[in-house]
Image 1 (spheres, rainbow, N blue to C red):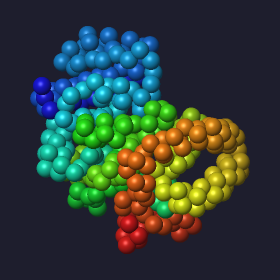
Image 2 (cartoon, rainbow, N blue to C red):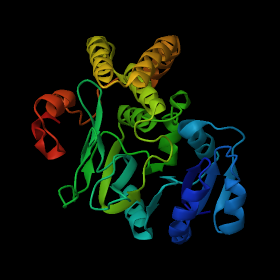
Image 3 (cartoon, helix red, strand yellow):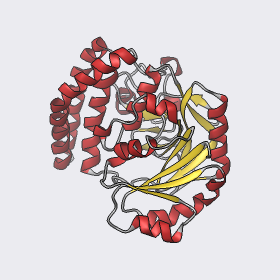
Length: 341
């Protein structure tokens, strides 16, 4: 059996599979290419079996979302490494080899990502992951190469491999044993920020995360939830609060939560000014769901208190990215104070 499984999650993505799966055929030389189907109703899995027989298929009986589906699949695998790929992304054989070599050479590294560039314009970094992720002092995630909605042009400014706080969920390689030891993705997240929550647990378990700059992947984006989707707003706000509650030390959490409530209230005010009433509803819905989840998260904290200490993320940015971006007008990662990481 190969030491590498390349797992592509799909849901009603026949058109995306036709666009991207042929570009991944040469990855068969490195490992098992598996299309995992999240209970599609567009005939995706039969389409793959008929047109791409070189790819293995795995059908799930229910749409478990990104988090739950990958948990189901990876827990059945015995490969040493798993390369997680969105169905709207392509990566070359050479790039996968670079990731694999890095993981094999760095046993303390639980997960590594390539530079993720836009497949719409490959001169720019992609929103989802860019050149590796970080978290600010209030728990807001951002990337080297992408602050909020501003994606930087790639001109080699992140051409060296680097330690990071989280890997982009669109494309990363994970050590299977570390994934299982960390409990996998939080299935309750369904979609969005589950990779950041997982990476935080990796860091709590004294593992490292990296971006391998020699490897590049190209991502279309918006294959799960389109930019500006109200559902995306819901998952981002809810899951960010859940992530903080699941991982932060208690005193840090008590200090941050009131500030986050204030910031989310400010977001609602800005949505009101813009007439984005659907977004306001989703923020309120996200908070209600978070409050209902508190007993479950408390049980999770009690369990994980024994397994690993609560910590702030390694390489946390100890300034507010919101303040830097919206008030100080810092638009690029290179504008941030490097001494605050």
